Length: 291
Image: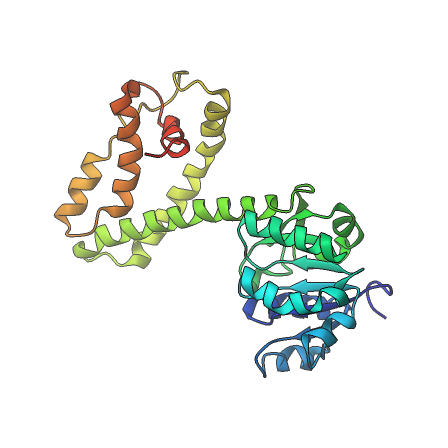
């Protein structure tokens, strides 16, 4: 017996993430059909109990719920454009990484084809799927989200952001932006200490607790930004936040200053505009108004 006798699900795209999603569904008792463009990718999932479709069309026809986890926006159109007639009346849940504009375009395409569309942004790496720390963000069809939420919750905590199909992607990419800049900062620090004989692993033992502690400042920064007053008490001023010493030390160590210089430019754009005594949170104005 499946988890939900009304639901059979098809997963199209069996890269590392698609395979993780399909595997979690199979282990949770969902009757699952899988398809991948290149041969051999389905073998492990089939061994776990999934059925392999010979074509994308066969996969679509076999299920009421179709999951797309493909390479990119173009791949979604390449696979599903020829099948729009067969998708009609079904739910398409697209967790392919796309931009907000691309997600909205796919939602409009799906509406014209009579397909109920839900867009998803996966805040997890494949080994996290099905674990408590996995989070997946959704926007688009409220009906699809609520009807199939038990299925979606198999993969991780599910959060719905509304009918605008681009919102999940926007949140996804914004969160990833924060992650990548943090990782770049860690790599910069590791490069700085390397000439002194410090390994990246040794540096990580110091960096991880420090960066974790510093995330506690995010809510305070957010409160200042939302309040729009960068002069409130308790903030570190932009003048005091100058990164000259870090840049000098980086150069002395013979490493690139690109990652830190980017932040320095944001700071000095506000200082040069006369806001040096205001708080560090004001650099968001440099980001909001580039140039």
